[in-house]
Structures are given as structure tokens and as C-alpha cells.
Amino acid sequence: MAVQGQLRRLREQLGLSLRELSQRTGIDASALSRYERGHKTPRADTLATIAAALGVEVELRPARSANARFVDALSQLQADAVAADPTLLDRAREHLTGLEGTSASAEQWRRVLDAGPSAVIAVLTSTSPDVAALKSDSPLAFVVQVSAQRRRELAEAARAS
Image (cartoon, one colour):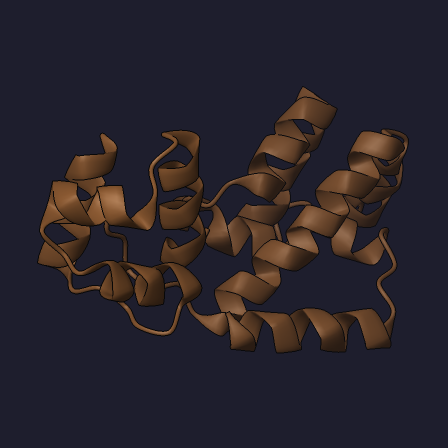
């Protein structure tokens, strides 16, 4: 979630006004308001000060590329489809038939599919960089149909975020 959404949600959960958070942090209330609305991004040290006042920790991670966010969005659609219809795993297995020994990811997917829907969903919804390539080679991409229009919308959203 974006910083601004987190800041406001946490402040409101604690029942704090902007003025009260300003007093706790020593940061001007108008600056806090700009951070919450996304009009300005706080520096890392400022964010750490705000987080401490809200009783949370800040975790900084490298930004994900638009392509990675697009793959994540497509993978989420596939995960949702599997949750709704686990028989899709059989069709994905059929897609892998004949690909024995052709790629490491085919063998990995075969093992994941054999582990069942929850394992497939776990891979598809993982944000770990270690599974990014596996998600990109998902056999479910051939089973779960996504319209060209929906793909464009997902790509635009990935570029915008």
C-alpha cells in the first residue's frame, strides 16, 4: 500500500488528529496532511519519525518494475480463478504434457500443480523475487483467459503505480 494510505489509516486507527500527530512528531500538521494525501513524499528519516510516533516500523524495499507489477496482477487473476475452480489445475497439467525436460520451470510447475490448489495460489500470490520467473512461466496463463482489454488495463495500472 502507498505510504499516504498507510499513514492516514494508522493515524485514524489510533484516534489521532493531524494536530496530535504533529505534536508527537514535531512535524508541521500541514506537511503531515500533504504526506497523507500523496501531494508530497516524506524523506526516509521523516517517515521513520512518523512511524515511531504511530508505533510501527518502516520497511524499505526496492521498487518493483512495471513489468513485475503486471505479472503480479495477471498472477492474481490466475490465483483467483484457481480458488474458484480447482479443476483448472488439470487443464494446466495437460498444457505441461509433452514439455518434459524442456525447461526447469515446467518441472517446477508440475511439482507445484501436484501439491494442489493452495500451493499454486501461494506461488501465484508470492511477492518474492525468487518466484518471479516461475510466475512468468505459469501454465495457467494458457488456461485462464484474460481479454486484451483487461490486459491493457492491468498494464496501465502497473505503469501508473
